[in-house]
Amino acid sequence: MKKLFEKIKKIKHWEIYLAALAVVIILVIYFSTLSFGGGKKTDEADNTGLTLSAETYADKLEAKLLSVIGNIRGVGAVSVIVMTNGEGVAELAYDIDGKVVTQTGASGATTSTETTKKTPLLDKTGKPIILYINPPEITGILVVATGAYDPAVKLAILRAVQAVIGNSDAKIEILTGK
Image 1 (cartoon, one colour):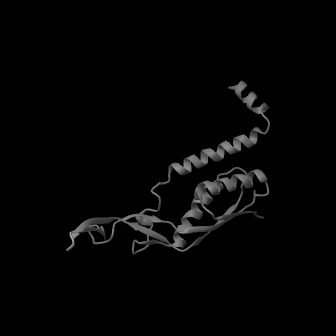
Image 2 (tube, rainbow, N blue to C red):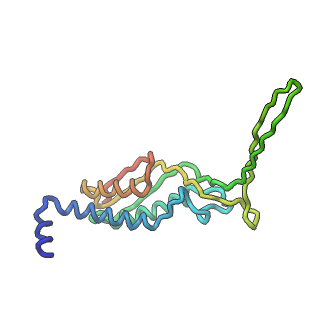
Image 3 (cartoon, rainbow, N blue to C red):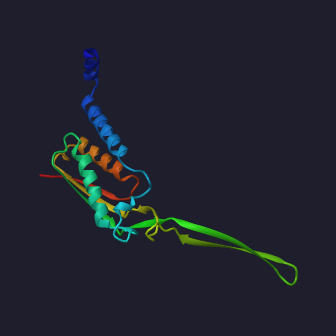
């Protein structure tokens, strides 16, 4: 064990590799607690069950980001603001009936038309069954951290935010706090 530690100490910038490894471990732990259903669960919906308020979504995302970023070595005190555009929209379960109607005209020609009818599925209480709720669009994220003066910490924060929000065109700004 001692020989292994000595070999690690001989590697240039081993502290950066160790910090990157710690970030990866934190992100793996974080993502293992997420549900990957393509959207939010129905318990995060508003009282109609058909939308997810932008404020609620932003608050929950801010809390997740604070939790992840706060565990990065060297970050110090951190604040996060998430800006969103609009509300999340529910994707409902439907029963789809398809019918094909064939008609024969006077000249002997037949024509077929296909019609589909989408009926929302309802639960026992008469409310529509929600498959998932697409979250609001993230337009920007502001992170203020006292340790952001260090480029390695700033990069770790940026990577953590990108990992949490996934593929997004959101503008991410990281500033140094006092």
